[in-house]
Length: 129
Image 1 (tube, rainbow, N blue to C red):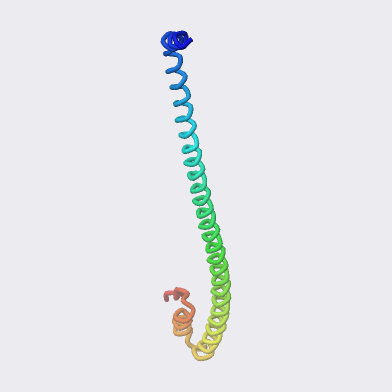
Image 2 (cartoon, rainbow, N blue to C red; image 1 turned 30 degrees about the vertical axis):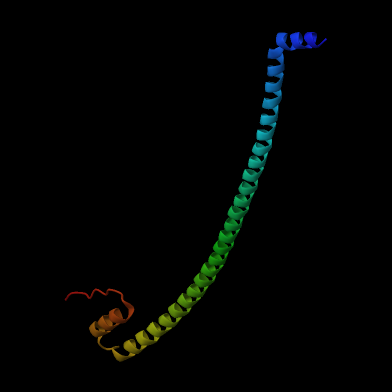
């Protein structure tokens, strides 16, 4: 009987070696798959963290933009109000000064025209004689 077992192993030794090789490869690949799965999972986790950081940065940038836009609009409104007030004051001042000049130089048209041109900034062309 021992002879039969020995003959069987001699005859089919290649199958035993191939079987052990398949089992060894299966175990090796199985272990690599586990390592690869862990690697893929860690890459996905780091990717998610990066995406969260990018989204936080975008949100902070958007908030900063909105704050700057509000400040800009408020500043523009204040400047417009100041401009309108200064324009009104300037117009009133010009009118008062022009009235004073008209009263002062009422009898002297050439000087009146010259002084009004200085005050108002208009170019006045005097008639030639």
